Amino acid sequence: MSRIGTRAAAEHLGITREMTIPPCTHQPFCGIGRTRYLAVQISANEGPMSQTDLLKTDCSKCAALCCLVLNFDKGDDFAFDKNAGEPCRNLSGHSCTIHDHLKQNGFRGCVAYDCLGAGNRTIQEVFGGKSWRDEPRLMRVMAEAFAGMREVHKRIDLLRAAETLSLNPQDEQVRLGYLNRLEKHRWSGSELNDFEVNLALEIDIFFHGLKGYLPNINASV
Image (cartoon, rainbow, N blue to C red; front, side, top):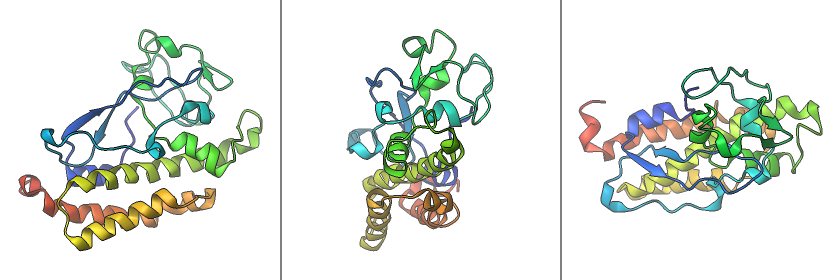
């Protein structure tokens, strides 16, 4: 299963440093990853970015959305095929029955995945803590909202990372404006459905313009 990301923005900004995040301590269920990439060019001596709770994955406040919504193919990272919208066979309620032994059981992809807090924000903010297990009719709309929230949180991550660039005052104001909108807004399902075809495209165009702050990749873009 390919990692889902803001591909265009990442390509324009350059992926150059891996950031390690701690393993999840929220049992009984977890599917978050240990590593993710910052889609900006950051020198090694700048230190790690600060991170607020918004992008922190808390599986105890989710409803196993990644194990329901995402699809994967049998291979090196997953032990069997799973279709999108099909609950993983390793789930019991919202708990992963092999959580402590994912890698040993052929699920390195689950260890590597991080929704950046989109799952818990979707369940708590959009659906008020409800679960598709209790209300199966919510399965489709939760899947759609989760997909949209993942795109919101990916762009929050990119906008935060862009703080390390020496932006001019106008671009910095734009960056902060977008970041404030994405972080502070209380999203509805319909707004998340429209995000990728509206505000997300606007933000991606902004990201494209930031390549001018990265002179060492300009020649290859």
